[in-house]
Length: 119
Image (cartoon, rainbow, N blue to C red; front, side, top):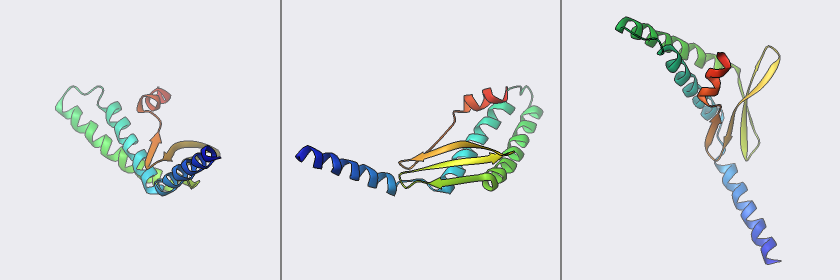
């Protein structure tokens, strides 16, 4: 009987920690913007040979992350399930999960997987 009570106490404690630290919409948006910035910077700086190319790459990254950030802010839908939150984007009638929030951290796809999906 004691082990069942201890197990129940641990489950309630972990559930409470998850509820208190569940990331909100802002955390999901920031994580996706950081991922977008990282992917754009990596992709645009691949073939930089001169200072002029570096300037154009930096300008492209600034415009890309600015516009991408606006798109993320407008299209991101975050559903809170008390212990975790899930970020989805619906485009062309298809809904995709783009982020999962748990214990105060937002998990997104790996930047290498994102780059592979575009190639």
